[in-house]
Amino acid sequence: MLEIVSWIAVALILATATAMLIDTDWRINLGALALQYLAMLWLVTRHLPFAMGSAKLITGWMVVAILGMTRLGLTNVDDKEESFFSQGQSFRIALMGIVAIVTVGATPSIESAIPGLGLPVIAGGLLLIGGGIIHLGITTNIMRVILGLLTMLAGFEILYAAIESAILVTGLLAVVNLGLGVVGSYLMLAGSTPLESEEDL
Image (cartoon, rainbow, N blue to C red; front, side, top):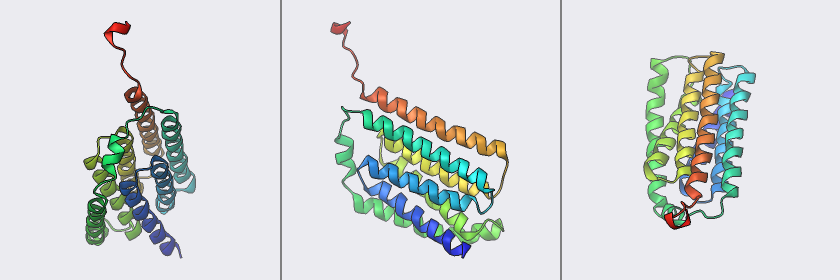
């Protein structure tokens, strides 16, 4: 039963990572990121206590809230990036398909090299890392870059939790996640504020 739920979490990761790549609505992207953290909770608790896994979930949802409140307060956001991002959706779906194929091929090899990780844990981590890398490679939009970094870091956390269960490392990764959220929020605010011209000084 646990194995079935773990594979459901992997399927949820694949669906949310793909949705973040093809959808232009920032609300859907942040909702998909929140669901990713929920799936991450299940995979991480395969090797960590529930309290440590829930700390990762709460941290992730705090980051989602920070980015959401910041984006909600922006009024003069340039939509050129979003109109560009709405093109080439089939290409991005194909890229995510390649990531899924590579994950299917690499997961048994990694499991045989490092026994005990679990196939769903490895698959979920690789899907998130691959989806994050794709996100970073196709856009320069500040919010989407932060989403890509958070996605890639979530994949790393899933794999790392299966190897190391130190509380200090978990706390450090939580601080890194919060730092990315705060930095992304600041950069979005700074990028949306028009610079004063010399005549106005």
